[in-house]
Image 1: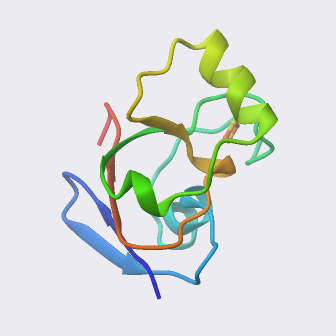
Image 2 (image 1 turned 90 degrees about the vertical axis):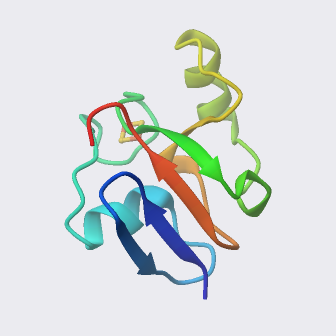
Length: 95
Ligand code: FES
């Protein structure tokens, strides 16, 4: 089962294979921005991937639109649209 590290909170959790980063955070009580409740609309759940980008799903169409309109960096993803298939470390600007 994949492990997700939330930096710099120093929290690490184990999740189901294919679970989203958004659910991994929410289920474990880690605050993550959202106004659309994980429907890939608001872009508030933006996270920076520090390690393990290769273990994440490819961006879906809704995520591609948010990434283009929000000037995402190449290490940033929309957490509610990103599924995890291996170990990963992420952070945000507000943790
Ligand atoms: S929670 Fe709104 S885009 Fe992810």
